[in-house]
Image (cartoon, rainbow, N blue to C red; front, side):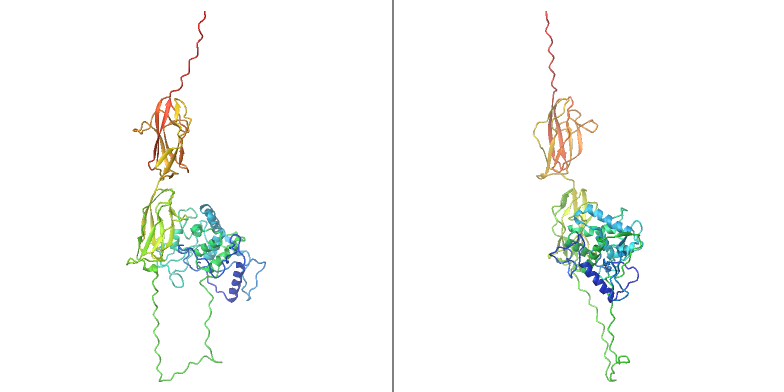
Length: 565
């Protein structure tokens, strides 16, 4: 997808031939890291792997893009078949505006940390940025990464393009009737609504900012667990951005070119592309045959022949309704209560059925599931949005939902992709703190100490939940007055804090990966007797441990010398 900039140039037959030669040359070799399986066809044929079933509507809405190819790496320009139209050569195309290049590299670094298995190369972002907007119109951005003027694709009104009615009330594209692709990476508003990221840390997610757009594109390309060092996954990721074989070939060509070497150039000095996918070469209609020396004579009609009536123009038939158009509402398909402890995967998946007004199920439409609220829960793959196609019974099952570390309630909203008029269906979900329902000591030795001394053994306990190890569970340990009085005892055994001061209550304890807690060393004051240590976890698991303090040993008196006479 590309923005409109400058006058559109039309290519002649010579340029087309040169471009075809460039494609052939670039397709003949694979760049390092993108070599395809030798047993599989290269990605430059006439077919390509489509995105996985359930993939979200592509980033650009299959909008137009720039088709200019990188120059061939030859010592001198190759002559064209027609004088005056050589294939562009040289180092100029390898230059990427400084701020744009920085945004690509910063996005790669963040994805390397957030999704290391994706293996996203920044050169892929550069290749997509080249074909989508000519690197933000040659780097016309400010120091913060904001474009100096809007970069908009054509409105997607179904007239030569996809039909995508307005989804953002014109907030991003200024168009309240139809969506338009926006910004240097050309996201359509409905995709940006869930894929948008804040790449420059200013607290906003703006598709017109190259840092935000580059990071969003990186996350978009890394969903579904794709590994972009694998050719098949790389192809799927690129096709999910714009589902066109020619688009795939063009992006792979620029990816290879940028991997061979790039350099930074000043912002605003980048070379602008000139050829777009929606501007095919035009041919003039064939002229009518003429007689030598004059125009073609019209056949004479006898005066008594009535002039035939002009036929009425045929009426334009209404386009047939798609399955999506027939959806009237969404209904729950047996989803159980959504509750999980922090860090756990929810036991049940969300199931939603698409139905017509008459209650008939609708298959093969897409349902989007979006997480709403203050939560760090995610779907499989670490995303907050997932789109799934309904099966033959009209049911879409969301990917597994994993709770984060934030506890509390949030909402999962199901909506019909492409039908904003259909009311969304909300599911309430709850994340609870990690809990244990049982505690036990790991040792059986009695815990004894003499007054004024130190207990030889530390107390170690094991927490479980429904028989399984309960890791990450909060707990407290308190030396209580009695079994019936759980207030803190003011005498008897005690722990020491960092300053060596006696403390008889510990908070902020957490079980380790094995569900265990080992308490600090216990000391005894000069009070003898039996004392109680009570350990309690989140979830109510309780264990009371007896501690015995005995009298200190009394030293034997020294023998006295007997009297002598």
